[in-house]
Length: 217
Image (cartoon, helix red, strand yellow):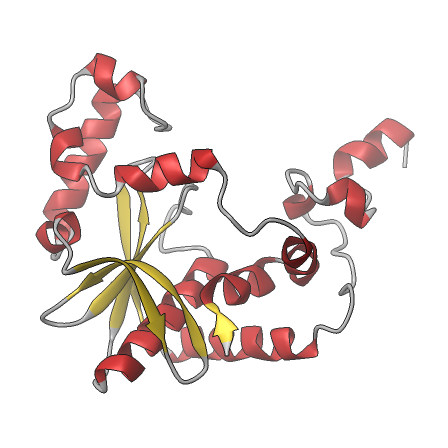
């Protein structure tokens, strides 16, 4: 039984997952604050500039409201995301389990809330694997197919749908195999921009690009 978050991290960097398992697994306060925004969309649509400036968002107030309006217009289940059937629901499937920040009904679809920002199109691969894991667990519990999940990026007012395609299911299976193979610290990544901002970079011992430039390497 694999945790949703472990599958996500295994896709991003197996070595980071290894170090994360050694420490505190609770999300930091700033992550909790960003995720809370996903439960305030109607309020944020009408919030003043001053109110928005006091929140952990990544856009100027006017742009944030405009982006959230576009999200409302283009997300077919926006109202359900504003008032989900379940919040912070623990889902346990055949192969994975974890928390879905929102569960929608009719049809059943899980939604996960990221504290980060999305790519220009779609979602990052670790988030796609995260979404597939939640969809599979919800399908197992409800004994019915789940064809889609959502990943929300409230910091920028964006919601992305994640359909259960063959490619995404294959990425999920690769993440499972990665987890099954972890027995001690996995190999370090090489020449990856992921290492620049990793909180475990010094513990890991990886040479980031910025460090190599300082050393003239």
